[in-house]
Length: 131
Image (cartoon, rainbow, N blue to C red; front, side):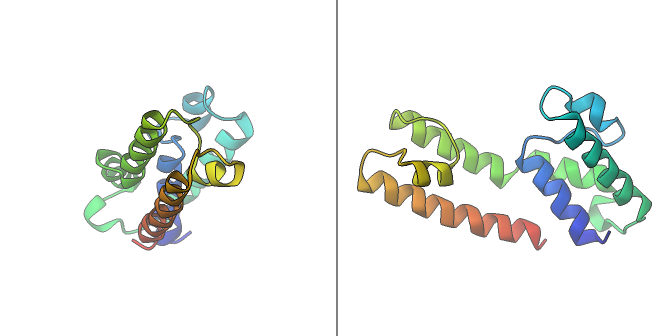
């Protein structure tokens, strides 16, 4: 486990809404939002992160990095933008890619907006993964 892998894992947890306080047990904290198997895998990876004794720099530790992620997350901000788009256009709320694949739009303008949104999402995700 290296620092980039650890940051990517924690960023993914945040973007999936599975962030929890890492001093607690993932199975106990996440039992209402994911399967026990997934929570056990999350805990195993968190244990690996701590066992690696990584230098977290300005974040000091994995929890410091999690605090950074949850203070302002572009993923959360973008999810809010997408939610507003769906509400404004009276469309079913789902992920942008699912909307494109399933035809969850009413006109070409909305389809183009979803394509652009997906492109920006991909760039934000790549930026976060390479931090």
